[in-house]
Image (cartoon, rainbow, N blue to C red; front, side):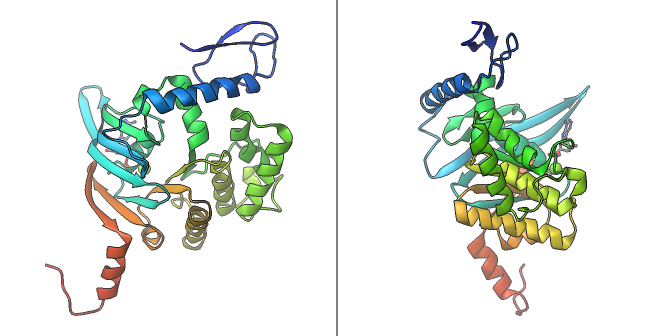
Length: 300
Ligand SMILES: Nc1ncnc2c1ncn2[C@@H]1O[C@H](COP(=O)(O)OP(=O)(O)O)[C@@H](O)[C@H]1O
Ligand SMILES: [Mg+2]
């Protein structure tokens, strides 16, 4: 179990996750946590990688990834041995009907839940080898999350929601506010800093969530049905925004969806069914397919 020492009162504090203040004397611990975090990040680079599996080209790799939920006597196989390689900087859509395992896969890649078997590497790091602190650090720095239901904190303003992850990353207040405003401007909400979620439309709330996902300049944005609660036009705007960010900043986007609008912007589409990969389509193949639509060609 990792501990840190409070520089003020000397209290030994257990760090199973990220703590920002000393529970004993209230001292701000962000600077100390930063140092610990960076030391741990160095450790992550060396001990958890597996050169037989990881390469720089792929930002996420899963190997024989399996998740079986146990409900009393019944076992529900949600993921069956998924091998998936996600290229750095790509826009990947995971498509499949409801119940096919999209959210489960999303939770495994995002380190929000643990697989029953198999491994998942993020930036060459085997997540199973990380302790709770390291996992929290990785989630905070490397991954931005977007959910169908926005998941904003209702009592906080747009700006406070966006800057919250920066607090956990130890950023100073001025820098944090500047960056928060910049991000809200980037998603088209330059005039909504002080609005609470209930004072915003669904599309605007999802824009706040997109800005929040980018707070700590993550390498990966994971979006689970980001358009699921939005109308057609607003959903399209969110997808276009994600694509724009993907192209301008090079952030890898992995989006679980059953929204066909995603096809246009995706570099690849992974179709999953019953917890397994059914097929993977490349963008180049998609264009070909669209090109042959309306011709006499009939697939057998
Ligand atoms: N926490 C859970 N406990 C038990 N079964 C679950 C749980 N979460 C998901 N499942 C089951 O796992 C399968 C995949 O679910 P999910 O990943 O949510 O699919 P999707 O996101 O594609 O709709 C479904 O059969 C679902 O009922
Ligand atoms: Mg789902």
